[in-house]
Length: 257
Image (cartoon, rainbow, N blue to C red; front, top):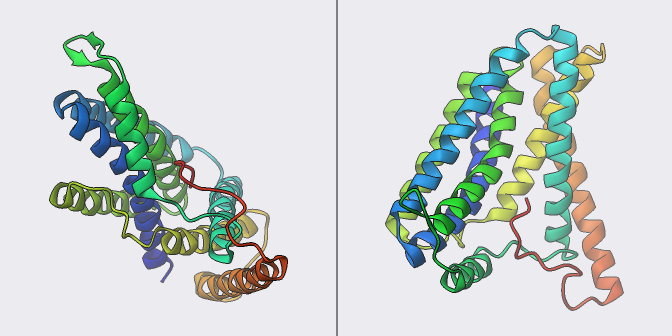
């Protein structure tokens, strides 16, 4: 069960970040050409692979209990960040992530940027696609490494990330448009629940706790985190209505999770 949940968490976390990277790459490629853009994407992918390749084996040198504590803490940082924002969006206190608005903004910026050529590349296209893929992928890389640091999960997490990359890339090639119809907040809500649950589970083990039934306790933790989060959405949604807010308090056309 925990292996399946691990795969799904890594897959959906990777997919969300890759959807956001795809929006940037499409805007630059459509506006300024694909050669320099794709070279930037490839360079970012190599850099991310190097990070995973370097950090993954290093984690095997850390004592198991300390590793569980570190892994749990990192997953809680990622999970609670995603879950907090997903709860605020679901309750109306934060605007939904708008991939079409981001795409339009990136198109306008790409069209207005000057042309500078370095090493035979359109430097704007190269650097923007590299930065977009690297920064969005960095969180994926840390999730893969973090999952991989516990009980040899690198192959599972890496397979999940690779599958997500394939699905998003194929969808982008076929549609040639940002994946604005993807239920992104729902995905982020689910990923936040899963990462937070794994963080609680592994962090507690690292601190010396022993869960009844071992891995079988993980679904119960998932149910608790999900239930608590849904209650938070319900309470905040009522508060949003009580305050009479006609629109979210914060817009969300940026690339944050």
